[in-house]
Amino acid sequence: MRFRNTKEPSPFLSQRLWVYNASVPKWTGNELRRRRARHGLGIAALAAACAGAEGQELRRWQERTGPGPSPRAEFGFAYDSERQRSVLLGGSSTLNFRAVNPQTWEWDGAAWQLVSELGPERRCDNAMAYDSARHLVVSFGGYNGKYMADTWAWDGSTWNRHDVAGPQARADSFMAFDSRRGVMVLFGGQAADGTILGDTWEWNGTSWKRVADGGPPARWIQRMAFDDARGVTVMFGGASETGVHGDTWEWDGGTWTQRTPSASPTARYGPAMAYDADRKVTVLFGGQSNFAFGSGVLGDTWEWDGENWRRLEIDGPDARTFVKMVYDRRRKACVMFGGYDGKQARADTWELASAKPSRP
Image 1 (cartoon, one colour):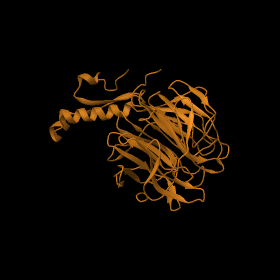
Image 2 (cartoon, helix red, strand yellow):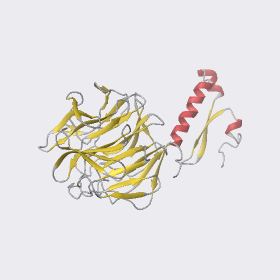
Image 3 (spheres, rainbow, N blue to C red):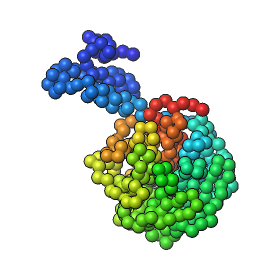
Image 4 (cartoon, rainbow, N blue to C red):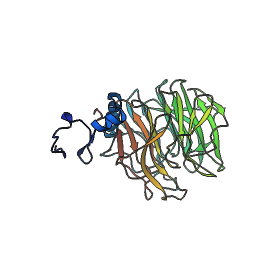
């Protein structure tokens, strides 16, 4: 390691605020004595600055290589915290959304494993999330040339269908599990007649209940994640007849509230989004800003802390949309697979970690 300031060969012996940028790599320093006298910069402010610099440094996208699912987009994806596996169901390998898959795959942090080709018929555009109260992955609806309205639960070895009344058939809705109230929250999607929906439903493990019709404008291909620290389901973006959305909404179990942050990602649909339970932020990557396939595909990374969105200026995966992401709590990493890069479906696995994750 070489320090660029030869008069002060170590940042630990100087009166400068030093920040190490591992991507360059180099140290940079700012003189503190004059600034401290003029602006009253204290120890607490220095600690906060150093903590912010460290947080930026620790966010890393890393590609994980090895065999796994074939290229696909718009699959169901959920993290089973009991079994410590990321579970993937279905997905489409082409943009006509007819070459779809019946497979169930699991990622344990080291390798992908094909665990089932039985259960739900082949599909893409299904809503899926993990029910941590009942230790089940739940999938609803989807599309394979027809729109679906079936509810399935995966216990780690078998898919079981729940033959109950519920939301009408739809594709590209989204679902998140409210762990405080023990219910799945589902919003929106596209119905079989092409109508874009704006209803909110909840699943309690045995039955569906329609809980709201108002709130966010109707949309599909939006993303949702449950913020466990604040007890709200966060929703961002999506598309409708009126255009592509860039709004942030939160559901507290009774009311949808639109948030108005001073900074926000641009309007988009189909991004990856997951809640980082350790850093207590919702993470968003990519998506698409234009309706035309292959146009306006994005590759930026953002975080929502409940008050504002912040863009992370870090390198990472190629731009993509129709992609999904989950948070692996044991390994402290967001896990993202596949998606559509504007030309073709992808089959790469990426992780965004706040620290070097432990390996199984």
